Amino acid sequence: MENYKYHIFSPYRVCPLGAHVDHQHGLVTGFAFDKGVDLWFTPTQDGSVHLKSLTFEGNVNFDVTKPSQVKEGNWGDYARGAKYALKKRFELRRGIEGVIKGSLPVGGLSSSAAVLIAYVMALAKANDITLSKMEVIKTASQAEREYIGLTNGILDQACIVLGEKDSLLFLDTDSEQYRVIRKNPRMPEFELAIIFSGLTRSLVSSDYNLRVAECKTAAWNMMAYTGMPLKALDKTFLRDVPRDIYEQTKDRMPERFARRAEHFYSEYKRVRKGVTAWETGNLELFGKLSYESCESSIHNYECGSEELIAIYNIMRGCEGIYGGRFSGAGFKGACIALVDPSKKEQIREQITSEYLRMFPEYTDTFEIHFCKTDDGARFV
Image (cartoon, rainbow, N blue to C red; front, side, top):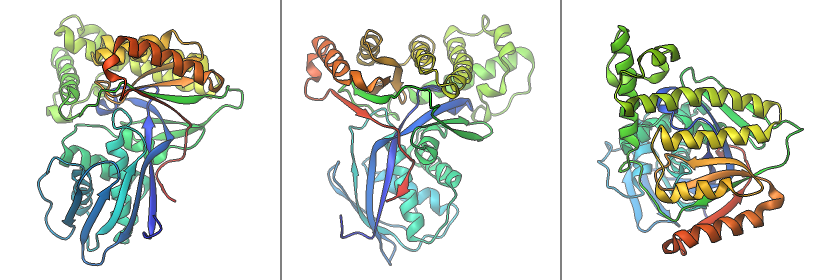
């Protein structure tokens, strides 16, 4: 792409522990890895944006100096969303002309967040706007919430921006404090297996937003039962409610709300244990906690399609897998696993044969990729 002045690489991310809790201000962990989104671009002088995709059909054209348009329901909405969020704080005078390309199938890796971050960084560069890493994270998150319509936290964006090779990101999404923890020298080597079910999904049309509302309703219930002052539902989070209040009230709540809260509090404890395991080089325990996270996702958070649950169960019987879980929202997309690199081909063969025996209809779309941790979004 020599014709373009700049090149941004925005990696995909996986979250081994801390599933479905960032929107409730919980504790999360994550890796950026060496597959992601590439955006090549040159600033335009007149505010016009002209984009082509090597992944999706059609071209995208709009003007950053004009008011934000309504969503069009295509891949160009992410560029328009980045413009929308940046225009809330900055005057935009220059647009971009460019080409974008994703390196893995869409589903479970926060490809939407990776794309948004690339566009935020590109439009900021074109307009001489200097953003801190946390400002990039919050701008992209605002675009996804307010423009795209996904009630997310900042986990995805934080992993993509703050991730470092051979390191685990540990983030408190309430205080926004974080640590990037280097891999302990005593830890065995590992790679990430990304296992695509072959079934794609859209978060906005899945039960993702419903689960967020259920978590908030659980928090509201607990507050009301114990006389805690209530806030507006959109300002209410499970993190606001101490665990002992949950223990007092869980049997009085509708069961579905109690299960959502149980997932939050148990995941909080798993992240704490997992960070200690990572710091001490105990990959076996870290992987076991990731498996337990997935069990809670299935039974307490109640996500996971038949296909994803099948992959998870096959993973548990594979030698060379330390642990893993659904990736992303866990409704259709992918599973991730931490694997022994010396056992990769055995793992690929076993999962592929067992899964396609159960779901032959995905023969053409099922994929396994092995990846390594990487640094966060950057100019190349």
